[in-house]
Image (cartoon, rainbow, N blue to C red; front, side):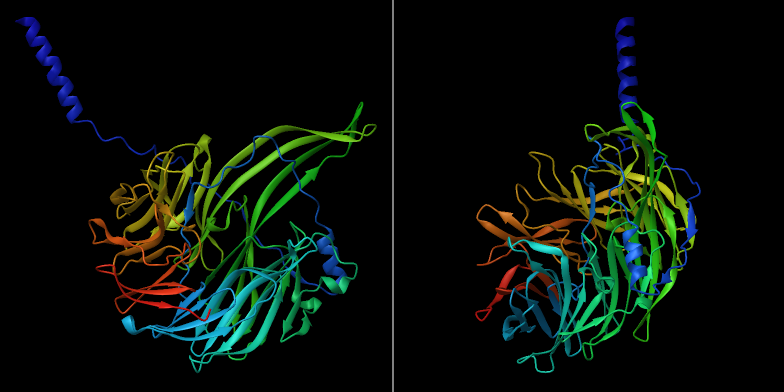
Length: 589
């Protein structure tokens, strides 16, 4: 009897212990320190006095600093931000009454009239060459087609260092007969474009494999209807610490007449651009190296090196069609990818990785070979918050601790950070820019999580699964950053997105109506999936497979009607029933 009482007592203790056990957290709190981040003012950028000064700046850039160490390659970020290109920043645009679409040869104009929609016109727009990074901007009775175009070499390969970005302006006064007005071009491949109050701003980058023989050839070129223009040396700013042999050009093109209103350039590249209001912020990473004097260690000539990285931010303002440089700053660490820089309530959020290393080169002069030895490698990550004037508001350093933070994205007023190999995403509350605060965490089931703001307090995510698992669409409730939860999820059951959802316009979301849509690859071809979120549940409105669903389909919601757009076909759909109301085919294009 005594033995039975002991067993029952032990069993009750175990049950009580199990009942009181808290659910397992997605991961430990993100290790971080509220330390100081090194910030210094941007050295004065001096306009070039002549073309020789431009050449001198570009000639000062060395080759790759540190050798590629075996096993040191960084893994691709596990977090990505689904590109939130608006309807005026993709190959599809709308002004509510009409829908405009680009194909490989021209511009298609459709009426947005529900089941009565029709193709109104097809206008040939010759971009020339091998084009990519195409965008369409519409404002009033003007449309601008932006295309990065490169020359082709003798082997048929695109020569990206010979690229230019073209802007073709069209008059839309008569939607049934648009006409081409002007063509403007800026040297360099397209990095970013934006429409600011009737002015199209372009940021291009020209990477130079070798310097031209003549100094004048280094001055950036622009064209207006075939007439070549060159920036004056005084419009080219000499970067005090050029990190690569490249030229960055910022140009403002008026939509009223297609003319270049203003342009300036820098003797360096650009890694990321952000736009808000009438301001543009340009970011670049600067790698620097210090080398010791050579010494002899028979039979080698030995040189010791130390490398480090910093990120430079520059601020440009467009005022009265004039571009003006308004200064900038430099922060410690490298920008790992463009999405690590984001606009936040009038300021900027910047995630950088400090990657400093020391190594030595051993050169055998007699046999003509060089070997390297790595001595130390120090990595850490930091999160910096800056105001609109690029003054530091607050920062976190040592993100991730010994595991180190690998990637960061911004969504829902939070920084989403991964650390090491942990299968978790750690959230940092940015509501107080002076005191960013590590908060809760969420499990991250896949290698990649695409994020998108989805209304106040909610963030939408798509997780790329591991082997044998399904893609998952989820809504995360981050109302309380200290205790984020997965509010709802929807598995794609063996299907996958038909295209990269990181492409602008590929991932359709409408937080007001709670709609999410994108093409998926089914067994019998592509389908279009439309899901709905009612504030508590995530359900599918069904997927449908009309005759043609391209992987790069774009979606617009106008007056309660869903338009699934592609150059070959416009599918007019009722979003409640997913019934196709009309199919408009572009037989001309």
